[in-house]
Image (cartoon, rainbow, N blue to C red; front, side, top):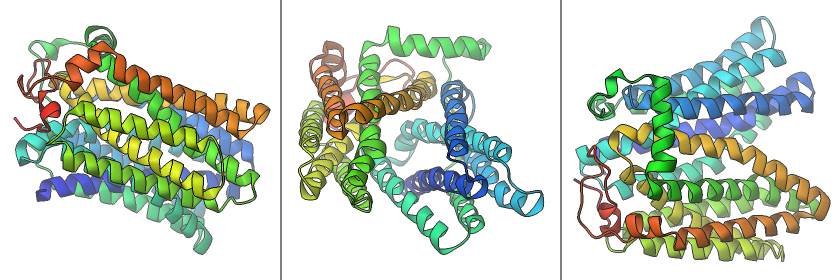
Length: 427
């Protein structure tokens, strides 16, 4: 990788690390400040809706504005929002209103920054000569590690220092992510516009993005219908089912070990995709990834002790790492350059919008029928998604088995997935 590539991956990892730390520090600080569990829940709800809206609307912005600038702006906004809390704490004092206000501001910055980095990949790959698959697999793998390290670092800071110090460190991480983005040349972030697109209104562009994703492009629709429930299902296992299970058996500390196994598996899967994608068809990674993921989640449903759970989540991690990296490339290469911001924004918005409802539904089932029932339901959903991904004609023909011909992923016509099928995303 070039220095520009390394700066991109470092910025993405630091941003994800800051976001995952914020997700832990803010609720804990709210609990320590207000003493109210309801206030912590209200903060999560209050920040969830802005994230959904920012992701959907941000896609339109990314097809109009320099993506590097959006990423930097989002991280700076997030850093300022978090850093403002300890300042207010020593001046006027914190209340739930301040937490909500700056939590919303942080959420508004985080999501467009994340989507902007995803949309930067095609131009970055074209300029540096690094394959799209390598960039996406490195980003996905290290991001999974950041998601696990973030809560651990946040928890350690809260235990060893003060809430104020933890907030400052979290803000500094987001600021460093913005600084790393400065190493990327600004022209690489400039979006490509379709002829006559400058006269379109933002609302109309948003509608065009939805129509393009769900009506006009069947292969992209199939990718989205697989990716969104896949991410949601794994999120339910990671954020709900596993913590509940280990709490029930009196070993809550094992949750961290299990999530670390999931992160290591994800890093391994993404690494294998990045290293081997030049020599294997995209369909091979999908079949292998889905097989490992489904086998892992059904093995997890047995809840046959810590050792079996660790093996199960490792399999889930490897499978999801393969599929997530593949689908990250598919989403970019299947979409027109002038639509990439809206495609990625709508996909992220769907994920953010569905995840809370999926978690709520499974939590109700676990409360009534037990943890195993919740995991079995999740395993059934993921199995259906895997079967759909392997059998749906539009995805199979257009995305996974296209021969090595067709336009570049960075062109403004709808590209084929020739670059993915052959393992090369270079022009």
